[in-house]
Image (cartoon, rainbow, N blue to C red; front, side, top):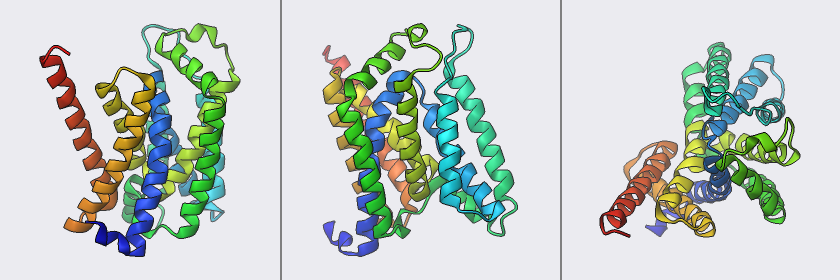
Length: 273
């Protein structure tokens, strides 16, 4: 099984999948806790809209993508719904729908429209370079260090969202903005390598699976990280062994791990634990 990683392109795919999977799984603990699971899809699609616009106007796609994502993160940090008839997810979903439609409009003017859309959705981790891995590792390490240093601030805010205490947050909250900024930076890099759907899966599936297996926050984080790594490893193994697309394979394996977690949760409940 380990022999396949002797090939550089497969090893690179595994390394970048693990690096982004660990970061996204941790951020996903906050995303799920806040009940904003659409935010990563929205930011990911906004990032891809930046790429499509950059391609359309023939400017630096990475720079335009970063600008779009940072502006999107800034605006999303202001969304706090107090009307009980509405949910925050509904507004974020509208943003996602708009960004998706606009991306398709710009990509439709590209000579390789269909292939571009496929890459936007699932990426191509088998084509990543060593430079991309190093860049992502450096940026993600900085984000991780920042979150470790100020973890009390970020978790305090997440707990307020969990307990529906958003009225105490105010119109603009610095830590809420910094959270969206960090998740925006993570997504803009990850989406370029993996695509929107795998990034969404890394953010949501590991933390949700971990929540099913544990009630302790610190254990949830560790389990989310472990599930993310397992999904990356076996997803790429499944992809190379049976000649399936890498992104779809990783998402499938992560979903299987979620199913296992749900079964374990059900089994424990059946036993009265």
